[in-house]
Length: 143
Image (cartoon, rainbow, N blue to C red):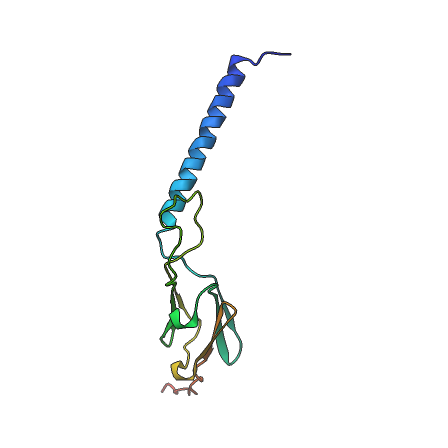
């Protein structure tokens, strides 16, 4: 059986040290980001008449969802009011959230606020936003 050289041992110690630091950094980043308001996943789909905003909000109740709409943007806020049963425990990894979710996006076109509708089913929020009808323009002759 060959004995490992001093260089190999030094290299292995170095790699082990880097791995430990990576784990520490990952835990620190996870602890920091768990306190931020997470952004829910969202798709925006457009056809000739509507813009649809589809947002994943798993585990939430529709009464905890708020939609703020302007002609050119949408803000979706959802609050999870469920108490966390693990507050007195140390997490090794924490990815699920028990706080507020928030997402604001600009829309590709102006929409009719009053003609909009929303449906929440199986943890998916679908907001249908009718586009504002194009105003007919006219050419102005230049003299």
